[in-house]
Length: 384
Ligand SMILES: NC(=O)c1ccc[n+]([C@@H]2O[C@H](COP(=O)([O-])OP(=O)(O)OC[C@H]3O[C@@H](n4cnc5c(N)ncnc54)[C@H](O)[C@@H]3O)[C@@H](O)[C@H]2O)c1
Image (cartoon, rainbow, N blue to C red):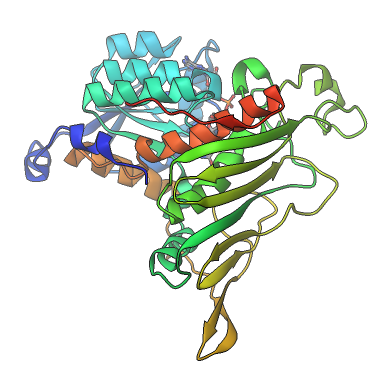
């Protein structure tokens, strides 16, 4: 099972001391694109936060972004380095495209700044290991931006599995996708190899892996046979934007068969585009029961319909429907930001710890490498 060893290295703060310090947390944004908006909106709702700075590689983008969001009296920098070299910060949100997640996060941790890092954690397993080592050395908080973790329905999946109702888990099918949904709403950073590094596999694959792996306690991945393709992104006939066909450099579909510690099999598929409505619901098979999690047509952090538990009750085969749960009107991003800030104030643990997402990234990396080699590979995760 995933071990939370990194959490033992956190500095221990006295929460009362943090409160009586009476000072606002100084926060900055690195990468001022699409998702940074959600971070800023949520930070602006927190009384104990001052958003003091922003950085973006594109000249003028950070300034224009803060003007649009109504953030005043902030300072602006041309990259994460100048920002972190200059500012005294408590925390940063790393909202850059995937390819720069690792360098921005490691630099921030080396400067003693806690990090809320957008998903996927990074592009490769080597980068994930370097991030975890920087976190361990820094003693700061690193949380990964999986807001579906805060959804009541996602929590229910974990509660059902951990209640023991399904018995020992031996097989999981997960994944999802869209008939057409290659994400290019604000440019090409999701589809270029140099910026995204990964396609559907990293973008939405990381969510569907997290949904089930979190439920079963993040068993260590052992081996993987992976496949990936780019038939839609590279096809002038099916690409959502034919002018992007030449620059499409990532996967739009991936599938895998993964063996996990504890004898669990993980059967996975994910699609940004396909000639199908869904690649199937997520299914968790246990020795005493099964759980069906209806697929969503787009990853929005919830389930696509009522979940169903299949179990035997009093000798009869029974299906129990799980009602859709709401989040009491709370926004998932608000919960993601607030839980991160609370961990910064108290010294942790991180709400979405890197020790778990390291395994998520190891599977993604394994699928990618196995697909390129055309054979099954062993997944080897170095000590942090
Ligand atoms: N949690 C979610 O629901 C969610 C949703 C969308 C995107 N994301 C993730 O957020 C990340 C960003 O996505 P996006 O759509 O905002 O991308 P984007 O391309 O719109 O914005 C990224 C910005 O980062 C900047 N940048 C890159 N490297 C930098 C550096 N070293 N220093 C300063 N700025 C840098 C780029 O110039 C760009 O403006 C991706 O990893 C994506 O997977 C998460």
